[in-house]
Image 1 (cartoon, rainbow, N blue to C red):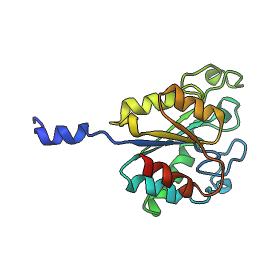
Image 2: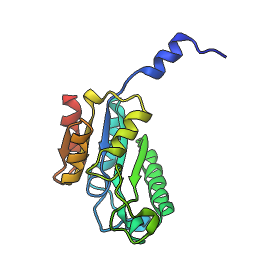
Image 3: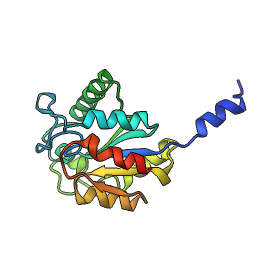
Image 4: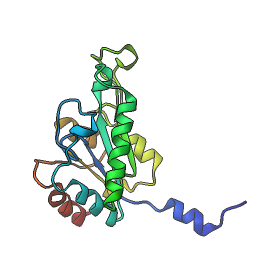
Length: 180
């Protein structure tokens, strides 16, 4: 059945996006986190995601997960944790529109994950993939990270990158949304 002009226009409406790093931004960074029982939200993280949603932005997660390449955990563990995060956020009226992760590392122990990847930050591959999958207004979008590689990935994708210094994530994100 042909789609009417209005439904096609709705599909083409661009929305800005916030690209969140995971470890150190949404959750307390413990080395190679994959276990739900060790996950601790950063103060204000759930409220930050909710504020992004309420402002009409897409909320994305972009995270390097070299623990997969190092043989410390598998991709199913990454998916399990992300699914749990999504349920926790949903219970609070918030959502992540997409989780992207890179399991590759050039020094990985697991052969199939031992490689250089355009998706591994500081390369912009995860961001570019999301820009291609969703109707994102890149001119109003930005990255929130806690490391140099997060900011470099943002810049490589043509987006501003904001270094989260710790503290309350909602308090950090609200002024960025107000300027968007």
